[in-house]
Image (cartoon, rainbow, N blue to C red; front, side, top):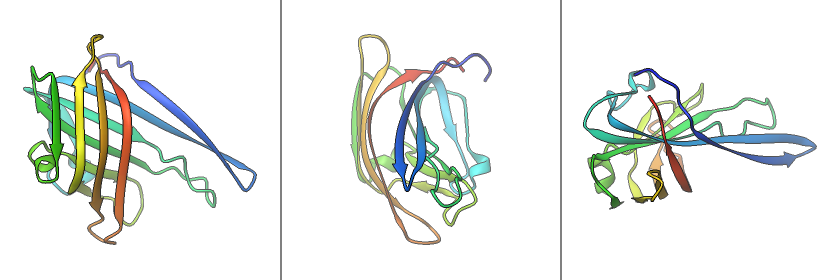
Length: 159
């Protein structure tokens, strides 16, 4: 998929121990697409042409105050085209390919299916989507709980 993409990027600044950290977040959706991956390796992740609407939330997590590194993570999922609203809980999340992944040199750098929580959304008059998510997964290696809670307008990607 090629083209120009316009996406909403939100920046949040935090000051800790005299150092400022800015978190970058993007919220976008892709029409006529499909989410592909092998359920494990981040390198297998792609958004290709298909018959779904794919949503992707990405953040750099603002970095670590000790080493200034940024660890990108994403939440992605898909729904059938021509849907105007949705609400999924728990086991329904996996049916919609809802995943969390970290793109970093960290302890849980794999693709993780979202296990619990809720994702709901509806199409706005301007064609974008309002999506609210409060979801949880656990790291395959560490067992650490990862909770992602966001409420945002997802902007159409031109890819």
